[in-house]
Length: 420
Image 1 (cartoon, rainbow, N blue to C red):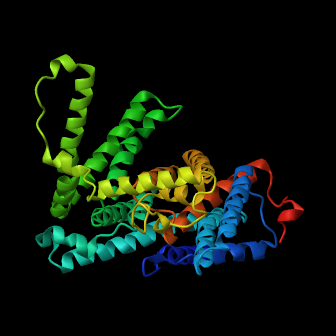
Image 2 (spheres, helix red, strand yellow; image 1 turned 30 degrees about the vertical axis):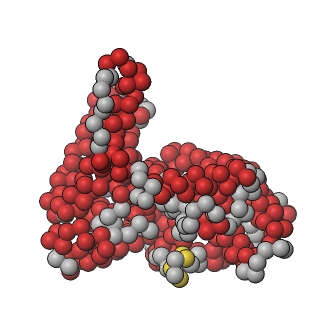
Image 3 (spheres, rainbow, N blue to C red; image 1 turned 120 degrees about the horizontal axis):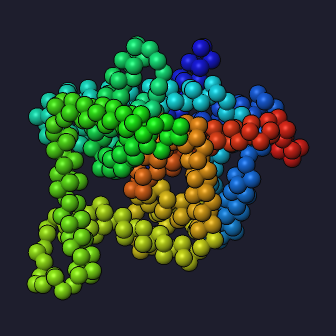
């Protein structure tokens, strides 16, 4: 028990975001991976895909170094730091990430999310609660931690340990972290949760070996519990629901309606006569100066830049190098990887994510649904580029590789070339 608690405390420290200016700097989890390697006195063998990925990402970096010979001062350091940060996702792929680490990781995710959520709730009430209105976004709002809340929420929702005390603790923790998610005032967090929750609720229908009546009973119970939590949260935090209603439902419903009208006009043009009414909400949803339009402009610029350097991208330099737009962020985890590593690195990255997802689906359903929600969130924001996200991805990859290694019989049978 002591060993687990020590790891929980350590992992919780890794999950705390520390920033210097706009840069996330808490990548100290790499030191724990180094400790595990020194303790074992050897490096473990990763999967072939990860070996190829490490080699490819290293080659992309070396290509970038060739350009740095003629580059301005400081570019060599920036590229090197960006490369090192990117490669932290493999920190636990070369060591044994055992059951103690897995258990501590899940507990730490929930514990830290619970703590940050309690702090957000305290801030919420300290300024007057619902009476403070939408200005609460400047008090409790955050987009850097919403994806961690998502992972914690689905871990709690999937937890199945018996015992009244555990179930009470789980229910209270789930309510608090759900409140924390809402109080981020992050549309991306709520959209990601809204996309994955229905799949989670209906997932029992895919269970094998159970009668349909039993599956439907589980779906009904899950749906009822979700409705209960929603009702209580609506009563306690009505201003938050109004905020998301105005910025998501009221804003995008007209856009979806107009899109359906356009589709219908293409399918049955003879029934669509006259001009269709304009919708200010729909027109405003994709304005270039809005967040959605800004993202599209940045993503187009990233694609165009990568088409000019398809094999290497910018070799780990960030969105600040784009000439057609002025931005310090790619506003998407996937476009960020595409920009930094080109199409080859991007495809390898997606392949690793897919392998991890298949593993989680079979072995860790809570982490699977939470990771799926994080991946949806990652469409609109960087996730694994942040230090807490890099730690999460490193743990997920470490879990997957350790399981693969054990199943394939590669435990402690590493090639000499990998030995420290």
